Amino acid sequence: MNLRAKEKLVVGLTGSILSGKSTALSYFARSGAEVISADELVHGLYQTPAVQQQLAKWFGSWEPAAVARCVFAHPAQRQKLEQYLHPKVLKLAAERIKHTDKQLVVFEVPLLFEAGWDRLTDLNIVVLGDEDSLPARLKQRGLTLAEYKRRLAGQLSEHEKVRRADIVLANRGSKTDLGLKIQRLCKGLEYIYGVK
Image (cartoon, rainbow, N blue to C red):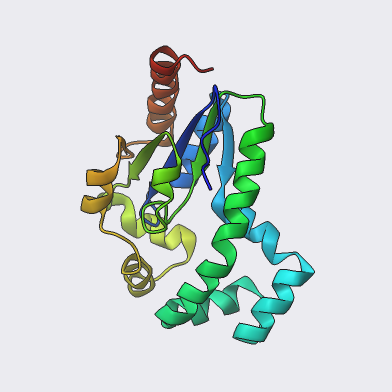
């Protein structure tokens, strides 16, 4: 499946856990882009009876927290979940892209490179978080450092994500700074690619 669409620019957005991907996505929305969150699509799928039944059969529960505990502890279970959900998420994203009137579409996917979805978009952006503010972000999210490292271990390194990205967005300042960067980036994309 290809996410590209005629006369639209489809951008993949990713970054490590707590890098500021969701905040960045909200600023792309404010700048007029169509935004899609893979996590939100997954959340919606979790509310459907067919998915609930399948997850309960595999993991003993369809509740997201229970499923997450299971899949983060067992790589084979995580792979099974991803093989089941990823095609459904791609299909939903492709439908959204097809039906939007907006020319710039930003699709936030935590495992963009790991899933190989970077090859389905027109270009890809990596958000780099600020190491100095990590303790505060962990506290805000209610995560321990050990849990953060465990989740990070299931992803490509930041170095590898940067190497594969077309654009690197440094989230090293305030949210206002990030918003201004994204506003300027959208203007740049508008000029370069002729999209609004």
